[in-house]
Length: 174
Length: 312
Image (tube, rainbow over all chains, first blue to last red; front, side, top):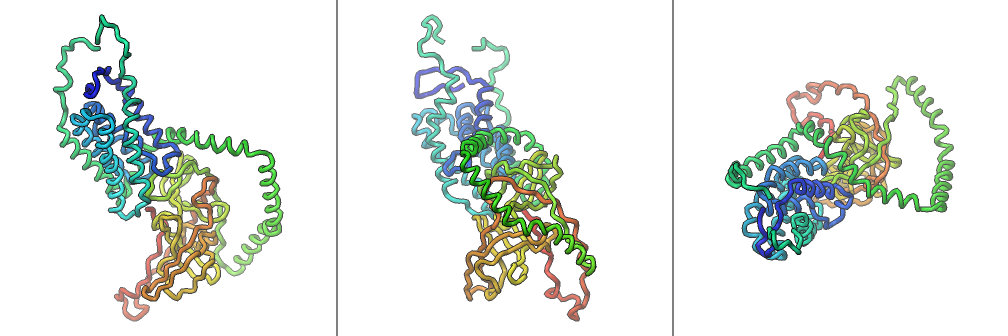
């Protein structure tokens, strides 16, 4: 468990089942028919990035690889396309995590944005290299921007089970 | 909180170095990317993962289909009645043709027998429901609800009530992936109805199709109907494929650029019919040696049969 540097609140340790549940929920959200709407974020990339920053010892490249395989099969894209992008995302966000959490949330979102854009651009480059056409910029640029804006609500929602009640028992401070 | 543990704290057990792990995973990702794309030999892995993913995906699609269902439920009596009347009317107008089809087919068969021509194959198939569009933005594919369990095999053509929709490219246990004819470089051998000229139409990836390699002065007009020629052994002859909408004839290039739009509701949802695979074509006649005098003349060889069973 890492402390939140910007606040004096101490978080409870994360529950592994909640990590699993949130990643599963993100996958299911990617499967929704709304995924075809322009500017829809890649939920798996966002949640994976979040946990790689927060809990890089629990959620690492192995999870990224497996989620990538699932997304590849579900999307009907070439196997390995999402794997590659997600593994890189997990690695870079884990290496950023020491620094990133010192910043306020808005600045964290700003630093996450290039990672999420890169996740999409890497996939596009892989497909362009083997002869596909660019399907439209909306998919590449708007989605990651919205996803990085969603970093702020995602932090609140995904940390919710770890918050402790504000009115604490003074006899048992921790 | 856990009390004092006798085991060493977990942060001493780091496992392999992150960079080593990264190299390992990236190597695997690139390897399966190349193998899947070039050799297409990972279908078993894909099928087994699909077995896990497919139920979740179907459940995730239910909100959308529930909305569709309730919308159609609330559509009202009047709209349904109108539609019903229109359908009855359409049925009546096509009745004279349809009622004689059986007789015409029998007659055609008899005549073909008299002429000792091979009998026409009959189109048979099974109706499948389109479940959802594949999310991959680089290709145009849909997933239908019939798979290996229903005996679908890769390569079967799919049609709707207007014309050819696409071709089955991957089969999963309970679903199948159909690559639409508008997918980039998806090829369908066609014939122009007006003059019988044969060619191959390719998907462009943007919802249109292109008739490639036609000379600049080719006899193609806007509005020409293209139907399957059946020369590939995949599509039965005579199904409407596309309509020519735009022709750019530029004498600077040797080929005209001919754009077509699909006739079938390729990008729509609904039901489609997956036709059974055709009977195999008779083997190609052997190459005639020395037809033009010189048997080693490479320029004289016949072009290879065009393959439509190509995906991506």
